[in-house]
Amino acid sequence: MESFSMKQTRNTIDKPLMLVSLTTIFFIVAGLSVYPEQGNAIAKRLFGMLTEQFGSLYLLFGFFSVIVLACIAFGKHGNIRLGEHKPQYSLFTYLAMMICAGLGSATVYWAFLEWGYYYMNPPYDIAPHSTMAAEWATSYNMFHWGISAWSLYCIASLPVAYSFHVRKNSQLKLSAVCESIMGRFYNAAVGRVIDTIFIFSCVGAMGITLGLSVPMVTEGIASLLGTENGFGMNLGLMLAITALFTVSSYVGIEKGMARLSDMNTKLAVLFVLAILVLGPTTFIIDQSVNGYGLMLQNFIRMSLWTDPVAGGSFPTSWTVFYWAYWMTYVPFMALFVTKVSAGRTLKEVILSMVVGGSAGCFIFFGVLGSYSMSTHLHDLVNVTESLNSIGGSATVVAVLKTLPFSTLFILVFAVMSVLFLATTLDSASFTLAATASNQLDENANPPTALRLFWCLILAAVPLAMMFIDAPLSTVQTLAIVTSLPLMVVIFIMLYGFFRWLNGRETLSRQASHSDEQPAVIAAD
Image (cartoon, rainbow, N blue to C red):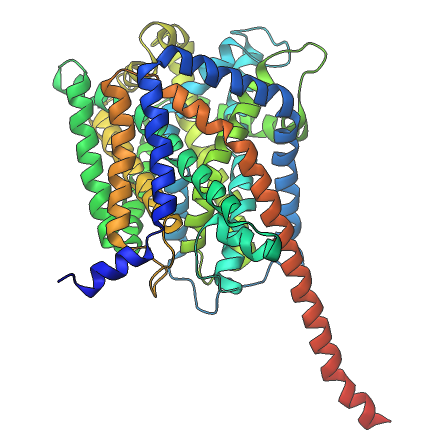
């Protein structure tokens, strides 16, 4: 006879959504395995159409998000509290979990390397490999991973958090928020489509994160052991990461991800400080400050630049691409931020995400990117040539080898990257399980068995693609294509969110007026 808890878990699982989502993922992965070239061509064609036709819309939405969040944070609605209890996590743990969930080990990879691409192909008709190209490279690093990126995360998080904590919506999924907003105009079939798109985009985004990060970490391990990197080592590392975030997922966010995020954030701070101290400190600080100032001075131009006359590819290849890429993470971040933000005010959520998250990226990209650039400028590692000849992962290891105590740095780098992956995937498994649940428990958690199931799916997809040597970039491109319908969903949620806020204000005025009325009568 089945236990009550097993029956309860089965009853809470949204089986039709699970069936549709897993079938969609299976057929896409299988199709890419059998027809990799054709799939890649279709994905590129769809993405090209997306960026060309809707590029300006993405740029406007990113800029709009920054303005709207500033108005909410410092306006009359900023003090609205999400729930009636005190915050569950300390500010440091809260920031650590959001940064680890929203960035992951891909941040470590691109912090060392992304400047090199801008240096080779800079914007605004700047000469490649020039002094100005180097300065703009750092500023665009900070721009693409800073204020606008975190604003996109936050603008979608607020409606979900308000619906869940203030309006007491018992389901933690995008379709549930849309249903409460649209009322009788809501269609259950549309809800299925919304949740399926979210699940596919999340699995695709996490798949490319693993596909990019695992070879980078194994490259470092292979360097330490003096062996060759290969699928066997990738498989072993993937299994270790899966075991780590499965245990973290099993014990829950409070005991699992919170502690991992604390540990990883402290390790990352020590890693960055060590490079700052042992590297060319003055150059790193000067280049970081200069890049930050250049970004602030040109923020509006960078946010809305489309290069319409020259028709250059920089805005679409980088800024539009990144905004669309962040959109694939937006729903997953919205659900996760909702879970950990109980007791916070809207202002606290906005400032923690936009200011705290951006500051973390500015420091990370400023220090690691500037150190990598200094190795190139001083002929220690030809970063731009290495990117084209030996690939990104090997280039990161080559840069780390120029540090004193390089073996220790590579070891810490590998551990830090694994922890970043574990925390990101832990939060992803939570949001996927929440979306596939009809109801959450009394602590707003989905069934543990369902979280463990999604842990395995998140690991299986990139492993399968690596094993058959299929292009992971195609999965990423297809996932990014889903960002356009996700933007429509976010607009619907924002419409409902502002309507809720206005309704709250109207009720407050009415209550205030009714309180004053007896006093007037008495005075008469």
